[in-house]
Length: 104
Image (cartoon, rainbow, N blue to C red; front, side, top):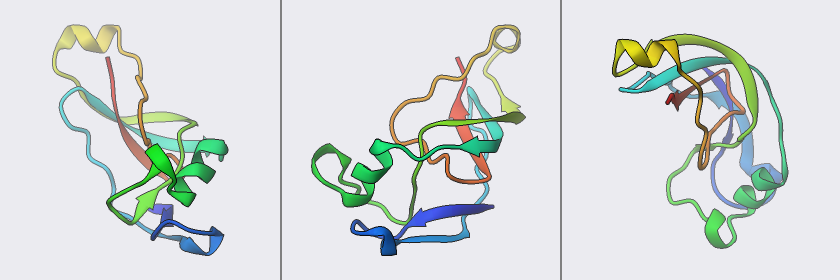
Protein backbone atom coordinates (compact mmCIF):
# COMPACT_ATOMS: atom_id res chain seq x y z
CA UNK A 1 0.00 0.00 0.00
CA UNK A 2 1.04 3.63 -0.36
CA UNK A 3 1.65 5.68 2.80
CA UNK A 4 3.44 8.73 4.17
CA UNK A 5 6.41 7.30 6.08
CA UNK A 6 8.48 8.95 8.79
CA UNK A 7 12.06 7.62 8.54
CA UNK A 8 13.31 9.25 11.76
CA UNK A 9 12.42 12.15 14.05
CA UNK A 10 13.14 15.62 12.70
CA UNK A 11 11.86 18.11 10.17
CA UNK A 12 9.52 17.63 7.23
CA UNK A 13 12.42 16.28 5.17
CA UNK A 14 12.13 13.06 7.24
CA UNK A 15 8.76 12.30 5.56
CA UNK A 16 8.46 10.38 2.31
CA UNK A 17 5.66 8.93 0.22
CA UNK A 18 6.30 5.26 -0.41
CA UNK A 19 5.28 1.64 -0.04
CA UNK A 20 4.44 -0.13 3.21
CA UNK A 21 3.14 -3.67 3.83
CA UNK A 22 -0.64 -4.12 3.67
CA UNK A 23 -2.08 -4.59 7.18
CA UNK A 24 -3.82 -7.88 8.01
CA UNK A 25 -6.70 -8.10 10.49
CA UNK A 26 -5.80 -9.96 13.67
CA UNK A 27 -8.33 -11.38 16.14
CA UNK A 28 -10.94 -8.74 16.96
CA UNK A 29 -9.70 -6.38 14.23
CA UNK A 30 -10.97 -5.02 10.94
CA UNK A 31 -9.05 -3.64 7.96
CA UNK A 32 -10.33 -0.30 6.67
CA UNK A 33 -9.70 1.13 3.20
CA UNK A 34 -8.91 4.73 4.11
CA UNK A 35 -10.71 7.30 1.96
CA UNK A 36 -9.75 10.43 3.92
CA UNK A 37 -7.19 11.21 6.62
CA UNK A 38 -6.18 14.40 8.39
CA UNK A 39 -2.95 15.80 9.73
CA UNK A 40 -3.19 17.37 13.17
CA UNK A 41 -0.96 18.65 15.98
CA UNK A 42 -0.25 15.15 17.28
CA UNK A 43 1.40 14.25 13.95
CA UNK A 44 3.68 17.27 14.23
CA UNK A 45 4.66 16.24 17.76
CA UNK A 46 5.34 12.65 16.72
CA UNK A 47 7.47 13.86 13.80
CA UNK A 48 9.57 15.94 16.21
CA UNK A 49 9.77 13.04 18.71
CA UNK A 50 9.74 14.99 21.96
CA UNK A 51 8.60 13.50 25.28
CA UNK A 52 5.87 10.88 25.07
CA UNK A 53 5.88 11.17 21.28
CA UNK A 54 9.33 9.56 20.96
CA UNK A 55 9.26 6.49 18.70
CA UNK A 56 11.64 3.54 18.74
CA UNK A 57 10.68 1.84 15.46
CA UNK A 58 10.92 3.31 11.98
CA UNK A 59 9.61 3.79 9.38
CA UNK A 60 6.42 4.97 11.06
CA UNK A 61 3.12 5.96 9.41
CA UNK A 62 1.68 9.14 10.90
CA UNK A 63 -2.02 9.89 11.38
CA UNK A 64 -4.85 9.39 13.87
CA UNK A 65 -8.03 10.62 12.18
CA UNK A 66 -9.60 8.84 9.21
CA UNK A 67 -12.74 7.71 7.44
CA UNK A 68 -13.15 4.76 5.16
CA UNK A 69 -14.86 1.47 4.41
CA UNK A 70 -14.28 -1.83 6.23
CA UNK A 71 -12.75 -4.27 3.75
CA UNK A 72 -11.78 -7.26 5.95
CA UNK A 73 -13.03 -8.57 9.29
CA UNK A 74 -11.60 -11.03 11.81
CA UNK A 75 -13.97 -10.83 14.78
CA UNK A 76 -13.72 -13.17 17.74
CA UNK A 77 -17.42 -14.14 17.77
CA UNK A 78 -20.53 -13.99 15.60
CA UNK A 79 -22.28 -11.78 18.15
CA UNK A 80 -19.48 -9.22 17.83
CA UNK A 81 -20.33 -8.77 14.14
CA UNK A 82 -23.83 -7.56 15.02
CA UNK A 83 -22.62 -4.77 17.30
CA UNK A 84 -19.15 -3.85 16.15
CA UNK A 85 -17.55 -0.40 16.35
CA UNK A 86 -14.03 0.90 15.90
CA UNK A 87 -12.00 1.82 18.95
CA UNK A 88 -8.94 3.85 17.94
CA UNK A 89 -6.13 4.46 20.42
CA UNK A 90 -2.45 5.33 20.37
CA UNK A 91 -0.46 5.91 17.20
CA UNK A 92 -2.84 4.79 14.48
CA UNK A 93 -0.97 5.18 11.17
CA UNK A 94 -3.87 6.59 9.15
CA UNK A 95 -2.00 8.54 6.48
CA UNK A 96 -2.00 5.43 4.32
CA UNK A 97 -4.26 3.43 2.02
CA UNK A 98 -5.24 0.82 4.66
CA UNK A 99 -5.31 0.35 8.44
CA UNK A 100 -5.97 -2.64 10.71
CA UNK A 101 -7.78 -1.49 13.83
CA UNK A 102 -9.38 -3.11 16.91
CA UNK A 103 -13.13 -3.57 16.73
CA UNK A 104 -15.13 -3.89 19.94
